[in-house]
Amino acid sequence: MRIAVDLDEVLFPFIDNLVKYVNHVRGSSHTPKELSSYYLWETPLFDSKEEVIAVVFDFWNSDFSKNIRPIFGSVKGVDHLHRKNELVVVTSRQSELENITNKWIEKYFSGKFEGVYFGNHLQRDNREERSKGGICLSLGVNAIIEDNANYVNECARLGIKGYLISNPWNVNKKLERNVRRVDSWREIVNVI
Picture 1 (spheres, rainbow, N blue to C red):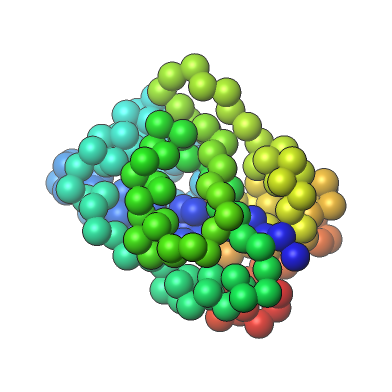
Picture 2: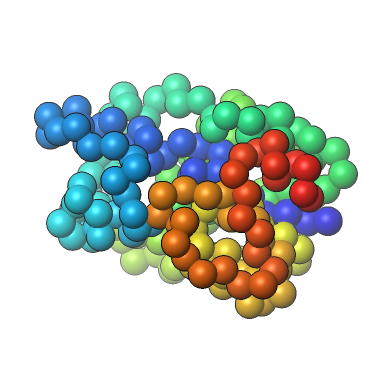
């Protein structure tokens, strides 16, 4: 089976670290649990999409983005899935973060993924944005592990089995029939 694995909040704890960065820069005390939407400009942390883009790229250029360890259980989970499946990373990250992203994946998941594919969402330049569903279809993906209900539902409508990792921004979202909600990497490994 060919499985697409999202990066942020599936392998890389982006939100926790971004919130720490925002709190440090602004002297605030927000928590990730306040983020009831995947779209950060709809949360108490930000006022606009443009502000999100600026702060996210500031984060990537800061020391806060360095030496971040993978999400608990993801290294063992990926290792287990890799034994019997073909794995690819499909991320909505911008391709201008390709170097940073690939170095991090190589450090923690060396040789486990056949490729890394970027959707270019929330970009600063005019690079083409690609849907996760479109990327997955073009790669012949059978299943996706994701934290965004909209993306996993898009894939599900295209016939791709979905596994949605529960997070505050997706707990109240309606899911397509072929999407299963999971709470941990241990559960992912047990159900795939």
